[in-house]
Image (cartoon, rainbow, N blue to C red; front, side):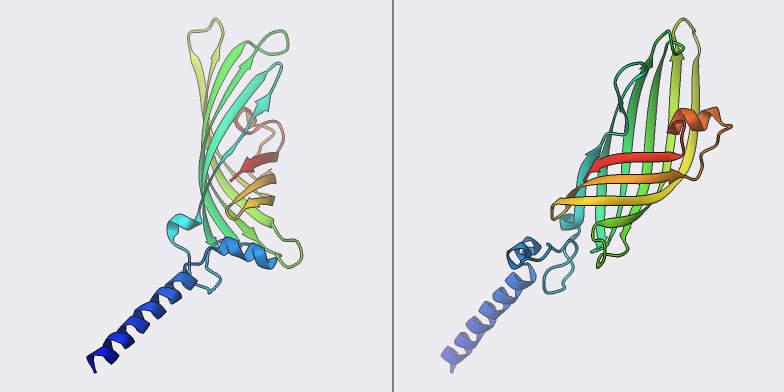
Length: 207
């Protein structure tokens, strides 16, 4: 009788191990079946752990050669809430140097922080196309050559638009966004200093 109990216990343990292996199956294996990898759950519908939904990447918020010269970097951390919904945060730094004869000689340092959300709204028709909304907070310090004082400014912008994401892996893609700055003002020098001379923002990011 004890042998039978031991056999039943062994079968039970093996069955549990197989079931756990199925639940923990890598969603990337769906590629072998001609399907897209799952982003937030296993093929059996079980939610993936928090760490398996994190997305890390980088954006280049500014790159301009000439006068003015400008370059920036923006690390990104995203979280795959569901198969079609992503949220994230990002911080950024932009360095700008402008010279005569077209600009007042100055150095501008700009810091930013933003929170965003992306929702894939018609995956059956246009997969990887997302509605995109974000809140962007920025501040800058401008130092004009030959002047002792620095000029500072800050502002917050709400941006909405679309993002197309070209998948590179299960949780990594190249993203191009076309956003409209709802907070843009033709009459605000601070707004134009922070976000440019147009309410339209084009951005390329990898995450």
